Amino acid sequence: MRFLYKRILLFLLVLIVLAIAGLKIYRNITMRHAIAETLSSNYWVSRYNGFLKEPRTKGGIVFFGNSLTESFNLSIFGDSSIINRGIRGDFTEGLLKRIDEVISLQPGKLFIEIGINDIFEKVSTDEINENYEKIIKRIKTESPKTKIYIQSNLPVLRKSFFTSCDALNKIVREQNEQLKKLAQRYDVTYINLYDHFVKDNALDPHLSFDGVHINAFGYDIWKKMLIPYLKD
Image (cartoon, rainbow, N blue to C red; front, side, top):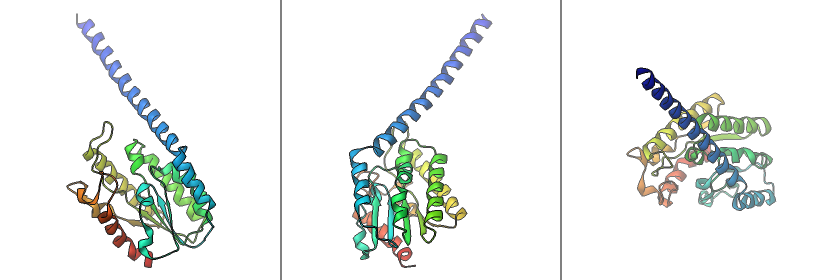
């Protein structure tokens, strides 16, 4: 009887291990599918192609990121040299895919904001950091006069599949710490946006309309934070 119990216990352990492995494989497949679908979507391709058709104005200020950047009305800074290179739903992988276009602009300053979509889709923090590092290295090598500014990810007020809001924000904080270390390693500027948007360990609801994207009040905070860096 004892032998039978051991066999049953072993069988259950094997099932648990296989279930965990299967879940990881499933998450990886869905993650890769989500990224590939975004980077081949009509919207992403159309917006990127629009960038390629614009005149090559070099030496300006480029904002490089996802929907938070795309929705940022940069005209409020009153500087016509500021260029918006945000695409809704983009990932760190997407920025790498279109970095050649940004390098062709040889910007004087580059403000990077990316990563929350990676986190939502369960891209590992290691992979996010590797993509950031590749972006920084490409810019430093091929546009050496560009000043790079890494902006932290913002908190969220939304859960994702299998992940609570608290757990997501814990990952965001951990990711931001890694970005801060990366900025120090490569001697680029890190801008801590997170602390100015957080309330009770999540995105301040008064600064957002959907728990992820920010409203006019949020953009006003962001604007005030960036003014010193735009003037330096």
